Length: 145
Image (cartoon, rainbow, N blue to C red; front, side, top):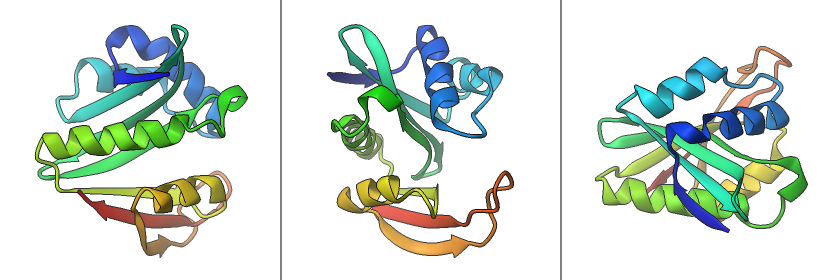
């Protein structure tokens, strides 16, 4: 498996991962905008045998990075792909002068919370009823780089 910066050619694969991973996925237009036009967006993909199997993205806001998504195709989860994406994202962000990463994660997504905690993120708050589709709370997490 390799992790690399995403290119516009990865858009279709990222959209497919979004649709396989989230009840309310990012639109194709949003994905393409981040890859092609948003100077503050940073996106990485994980590849196995030429197949994009996961991705991660953040938006740079001054010296912080707001993590938007970390997602892996269901058939290859629990193999360290998400961890590799988070580590590469953090390393590249630090190299760019980003000093802190923040994110929101569904409170019911215990696997993601465990991954983020293992990678040095701490719980910093909660937004009650944040997710409109099911009313789940968002757990706010952050990490210094």
